[in-house]
Length: 375
Image 1 (cartoon, rainbow, N blue to C red):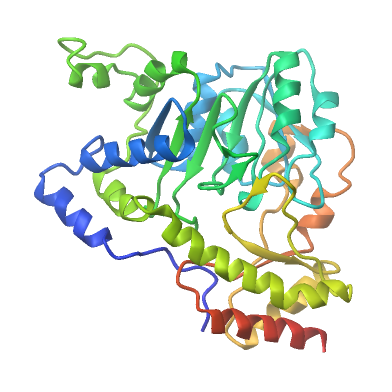
Image 2 (image 1 turned 180 degrees about the horizontal axis):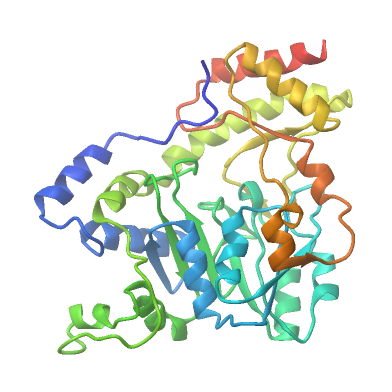
């Protein structure tokens, strides 16, 4: 059987967890938490990176830091995970969904400006599959309209746009280290703070609204409740597991890229014949092989392909159901303009197995079975 996903494990995870236990420090902000924060700052060139309990909690922190409040509007794609919207709905915001580009599955940057109203407070580009949105234009629009930019880079660790790390270009960036991501702590995430003025408050929000971080640095003689916040501090055990992977991030990245490139090479003839479509990587984007997907004719053909691959014990899955079609999406948001591509493209997309340690002969076997489907 070829599983759709296998969580990454490179070798030092258990050793580092053992060290954390022996240090008698298994709650957050121990040695491995600090190592992870520092490594992410080095990788992304951001002012501050803070490990969180999940990508969801990173987005919730960003929503608080962006001062999202009741009645504000936040623009984002409908083709994303529910956490992207929930983080802002929890603050009382209304979501304005914008159509996607069919080539990258990212928000269509040319539709954002038309969706802006006097109530708009932020734009949330989602870097789907570790492929960057068109950030130059998005940042330009945000600057012209005085909007916050919160990058949902849950899938974008170690991916770049014109030399800049995903998550490092907006006001805030949010990573995920869920077990389905390139680098994993089981459950986990991180927030990147790109403006120095937001760092201190981010630490406070992450520590349940207290100035505990300043206390441990000796800046105050006792800590107390000073702001809103929650328990966004990740366990030291999770950070120990994660650090084993990000201390040498190219080990995983290169392995995944090899699998991605093999898929692309072997399936390109099917695209040339018009049987399916492959992912598009725009100029200036360096992706991280977070996923490999194919696009089929329609939802019926996709269902047939899933069934076909299942016969050979190959795990394949479709992805998001567009949020604007859900009950909560209709309650908490609205779709701007026409849904030209969001639903249509989401119904065609099929994800194939891709994870650290996937063997080349397994990729070859999967590609052969995809070809067999069309024969």
